[in-house]
Length: 61
Image 1: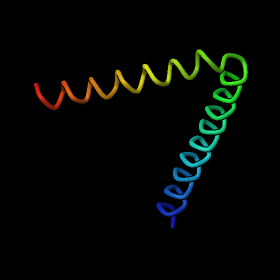
Image 2: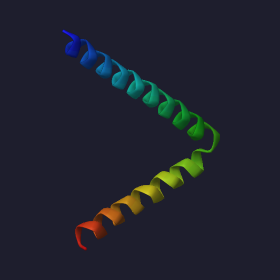
Image 3: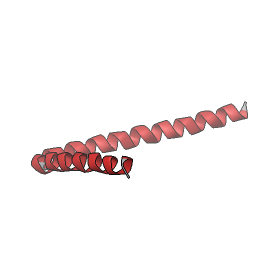
């Protein structure tokens, strides 16, 4: 019985932390998009191109 309660507590902490971090990420993303929409879009486009190139180079190295 004790192991089950411990496992339940661990899962509860992990889920709670995940939801808290996700809501913070969504809130911060919303603020950044509202304050500087052009810079945000530019960053996302350049970032996605960079990640795609990094994946390509890692696969072919």
